[in-house]
Length: 163
Image 1 (cartoon, helix red, strand yellow):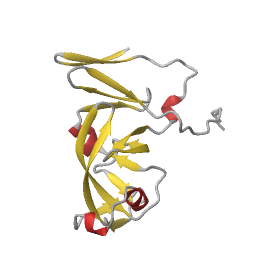
Image 2: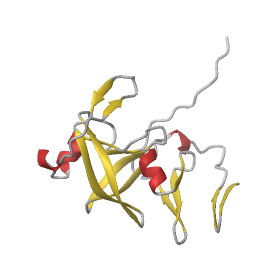
Image 3: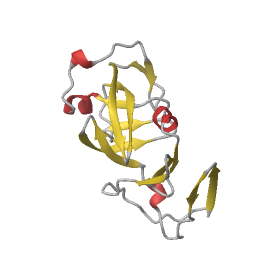
Image 4: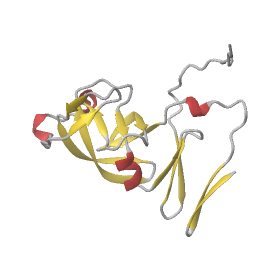
């Protein structure tokens, strides 16, 4: 069991069983953006800012007038740099925590509805675990939010080949 001590509370993680492979799954959460249910919100500690594809932006009923113009340039996973279309600040609720959150809008179709990066993780004082498929934070008490398990990935038994 791993233990993290944050006075006056503690967060604890138990070692998963040998057969469990949940750690291979992306950490998808579900919650609400401006009172609209959102699924497939991907939490990724390797991303600095929060990202929202334009398709999600339109599904929220937002238009061009709702965008805050920025000159933010974003680098994708392949290293290509492109400008964001703008930014929006919306109420994001996951679990019992609601926070005004800024998203940069991109012209891309991701496998996620939003990408929650370190900006959101740090603002909420989250401890995330892809191995345990959950997010924890300390408020008045420890709250554990489990990943949205309705999304899964195919797993394969892999043999290590040495030649």
